[in-house]
Length: 220
Image (cartoon, rainbow, N blue to C red):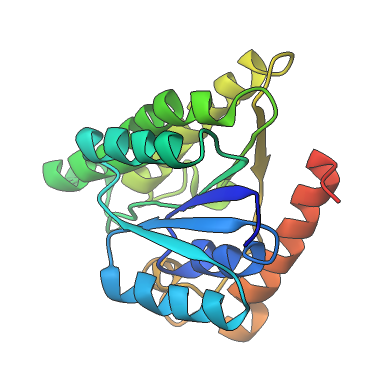
């Protein structure tokens, strides 16, 4: 079993799913998502690569669940070496003056408030030397019909950038990467009928990004 511990929030599909499989060679994976079946399939794939996964089916908007998760990590390992956050709520496209209040509420809870709560509880586990990885999505910021997703994603990244600057001298080390467009279910809802052959497969993008992690963090 690997000695390093990585938490992947949003591990049931898309980039998080692919990154968990790529990282399992060097880390024990704690996989967080709401979809139990997808997590179980992820675990099977990680075991096939001789990796180890611990499944944590939960809703990250539930603060009590976040506290329990982080307390369990502390009690078992006393630390985290890496946190990769890919969980996102992608609300339907709509004009700004027709945004449904429930879509806004869920987006804000998932994309902003939950990230703030996670940072609060995960930062002590990462300590001075741990790494936290987040992902920008600049292509949808301030674009028409992307008001809900774009605004809450922008708020998330603004929060993370503040944390990054605040910890630049003390750690943990916070990184923000820009994935290439991928043929995920989320993107398909935003861009139906798009030519998927021009997009980067999540597996290939996960490999590219983990290599970028290594260069940024100095990990061998």
